[in-house]
Image 1 (cartoon, rainbow, N blue to C red):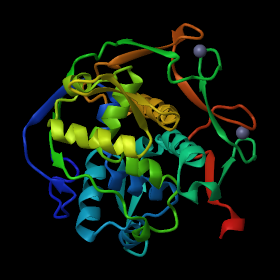
Image 2: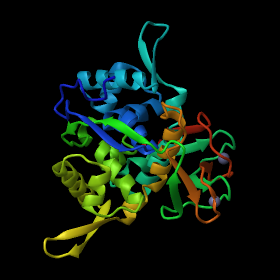
Image 3: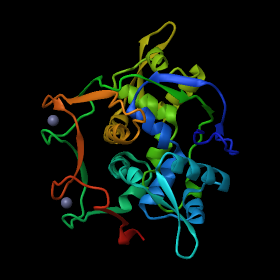
Length: 325
Ligand SMILES: [Zn+2]
Ligand SMILES: [Zn+2]
């Protein structure tokens, strides 16, 4: 099976190379399937009902070749279905699997509202069909209904705690140029930060308490220059901050900033999604999460801030605020 980007002729991805073996992780599996910035943009447009090739090309700013590659990829992993409409036009629709990413999409939007540098997310109004209210999504522990802080979770090996063999690709990082993208840039800031597997992998490792270059490299054995480049990006984006722990030679601890820590709900909902949809071997979750506050197994639920009910896919309406049009 090819991976997104392998057959691109954009110079965003330079294919080839060997396999990378890392600890099994639902976040990594999810990122390997959808964590490419173009895939994230396509899925975001899908949530807004954009489904025709040309519209997707216009909305995402992807070239024909890149878009066609990612559409094939997303179909191969079960995140899009290709259908021919009544007028014969081909449409790409979200599937049950990709619709189940709505929790992640909501968390991305929340992050962008509070920590994004682009104002697009402010325009989005969310309405819960269940209660009819406009709402703010909240992440709650399914057992105690309490909030879930980034450092309020214990991780232990689960039944699927094995290793995964992953495609190792050298990628040249590039951000999505704002000018090329349509009006819907509601979580483009987040996509630009996480839409490159290694950067998102690094943030996930930080949530597990890792702080040092050697620790990151042990878990993510990609070329050290790639790792250094991604750390620089995360520092520049104010996702990580660093503090020296040794002067000669200079060595640093990397820690999440407040802006970085606020990405936790996005990662948590992505981890749950990966548990549900990316366990090809059916071995069960690689990690068992416990909510420290209540001591119960952690299942994060995204609830409606207005009525408190757990939100379900298709019950959430996104729309652009009329005032902003
Ligand atoms: Zn709890
Ligand atoms: Zn509600």
